[in-house]
Structure formats: C-alpha cells, structure tokens
Image (cartoon, rainbow, N blue to C red; front, side, top):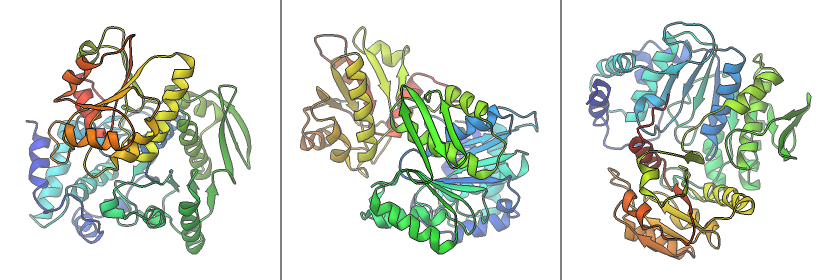
Length: 440
C-alpha cells in the first residue's frame, strides 16, 4: 500500500460520517495550515449536478492551449486519489500541460494536514481538500479550476471569497439524503457558490432551479450569464456554434461524445470569456479537439474487459448515475443506433443512494436488457438482485450477475452488440483499474 493510501485510511477515521456538510471544521484546518485559500491563483469555481467534470475538462484544455498553467481540483477519483489534484507546474515548470500530483508531494501534504489537525474530528473530504489547497497555494499557476464536491453552500471548496468567475452546470436530483428532494432546495445549495460582483455562468436549467439561481444571483449582486438568454451553444451541421454578446464562434464539435457535451462546452467557453483570461478562438478550438475526460462515453477498444465480451462487441464506459445522466446517455445511444444499428445491452452497478429506476427509465425500448452487478468493494452498492428489481420497475428486462466478467460473457445477441457499462463512477473506476489505465 502506498504511503498516501495509508494516510488516507487514517484520515477517513477522524469523523464518524463520510459526509457532514459544514464549513466550521474547514475554517479551523485552513487556519492551522496558514490560510492557503488566501494565497491561491485566480479561481474558477464550478458547481452543479451533471457536467461539472466535463466543463472543467473543457476549460483546462482551452486554458492549456493558451499556454497557461492550470491547477485542477475534481472529485471523486476513478482509480487513484491522485487524480483529484492536478498541478499546473509541479516543479515550477513552463506553461502548458501540468500533471497529476506525485506520490511524494501528495503524501507530504496529507501528512502535514494530519499533523496540524492533531486528531480533531474532520471529514475525509474536508481535510483532503485543505491539503489540496495547500498544494495549490505552494505551486505557481495562472488559474485554479475548483470543482465542488457536494452541493455548494457548505461544501469544503466554498472558502474562496472572490473567484474570477463561478459556473453552475445543470441541476437535477441527486444526493437526496444530503440536499433534499426538492429541486428548488438543491438549486439553492448549488447557488451558494455565487459571490457578490463575480460573474456566474448558468448552464441550461429546469425552470424551478433557474428561478432560485436567479434569485440568489440578484440578491448577491452577481452578474448572471444564463444559457439561452446571454449565451447559446448549439449543434449545427455537425459543428458547435457558440453565441454571446461578443459575437458568434463557429467551432469544431467537442471531442467528448453526446449532445449534452455541446452545452458543457458552451458553459466552459462562456465562463472563460467572462473571466477575462487570455483565451482566443484558436485556443478554444484546440481545447475542444484535445479535451479528455475518462469514463464519459469512453470507448474501450482493448484490454481484459474487451476480451471478456463477445467477439466484435462495441463497448462504452460511462459513470453517469442519476436520472438526468440516464436521459443524456439514452439520447446519445439513440443517435448512435440511427447511424449504425446494433443490439444495446447495459451492464450496470449502482449505489443505493442513487435513484436507480429513474436512471434506467430513459433506456426503456432502447436497451435489449440490463445485466446487473454489484460494485466491488463498495458497501453501499445495490446487490445484483436488488438492482435488477429497480431495472424491472423502470420497464426493462434484467438479469442479475455475480460480477463484471460473468456479465460480459453472458451477453447473448444475434449480432455483435453495443455494450454500455454504466451506473456509477465507482464502477467506472473499477473497470479502468482492470484495464490498468493510467489517468494522467
């Protein structure tokens, strides 16, 4: 076990709850660390339910194309914790692409935070976020892309008073145990990152969520740049057309697959234009074509997972896990079916904290069946039988399977299938771990 894993294991025992939304403990550990949140590079803060990671990935690709050094903080990780922390200049290097934090630097930051915390109760996300902010404050960069972990108002990342800009990606139902079941209440938590006088880019939202975000923005005196009103991103003749008050951009389609990625790319472009950072149309084009974000309609073309599937199968991996993500995935797969017909089979595992039947409902009439599996190493995973019942409640046939390889071998179609492995980022991480993918 790596040293950082040993430290993370100790840190996970400091609080009886994995999630306990509050900023009080965060302020305490930040003060002990010398207030690194006051010494960060300029920050772009991103909240939302769906599309946060993709929007951050688009912004990183565009900023790096412009030659800027970019720190990035995202969660959760897929294979290794190091994926959460990307340093734009690990050794104070030249502008351009950075790298995931190294084992020695991560271990030192975690150990430093652990020592200063001195055994006080603190959640694992809070103390690791504090350690990440310490790393970001001690390594030079031009900008920090900071993704909210859960909610926004009381999230451990919400300690930056004056970011360059904030972004709220589409809001939908998720984490009901922490954010509630009312969309208006969820939106109010996400809108907690809005700061006075700081431009906030708002992606396409349900009316109930948009009303709340607008209310909070007006109350805080934040300029709001709303999708469909102040900027638009649409697919036209296979291209991405972006339009705002500064004009129209005719751009190549995003490298990330799916109609929803046009909106995510638009939110990224609108945010960078609002931030005042020096990003040109050429930089945006390079970013759209070079962006990478694993487990978002990611094609698997070789490796042990592909070997376990029927010969000739087309295999896709996506970590989507809520009803809105299910809708976006189903729309993408329907488009693929129109272009090249194949029988669609889902292999799915989910956590019991997710609205499983709502995720699967959009696939009714599209997928032949769903093979359900438990997520290895996750105590909160649905059992295969429990998840099969959720799938059937959504109107699809289901077969429970003991594990991924058994499920892949059980796919039985008259012609080479299209297989989507989906339902959880934790399952996606397990798959990529089997593939021995290095997420650098």
